Image (cartoon, rainbow, N blue to C red):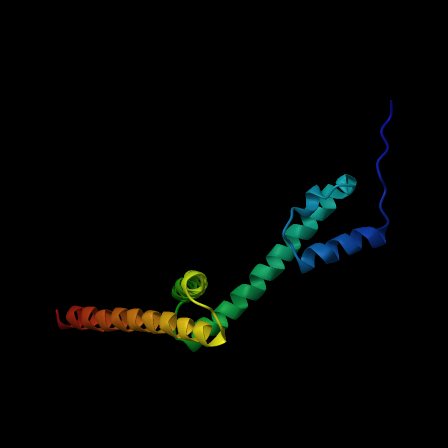
Length: 142
């Protein structure tokens, strides 16, 4: 019994690569029907990831320089900022959901809930910033 390899045209391979590069949420090298092109697809995946990483590093270096931070400190700052945004958005969704259980929700209610969450976050950030200033002042006075 012989098995035949499903040959794909160059156009099909390039369309797969283009599709993956647009939305790389799967392992391109494991795409069904393209098993014969696994090595080529792995090489393509690795090259794209390298390009994306280099572009991101260039953007991060530029933004770090604007903030007068090292790349490592900028990436730490960016990670915390992204996590803060994620948690703020989740808090807004949860409050809207739970308030929606006990009251009629409309656009005014949503806006007020978003303002409440923003105020809580702003207050927490101000408290942290104040504590950082105190800590830095104490460190400098020693």
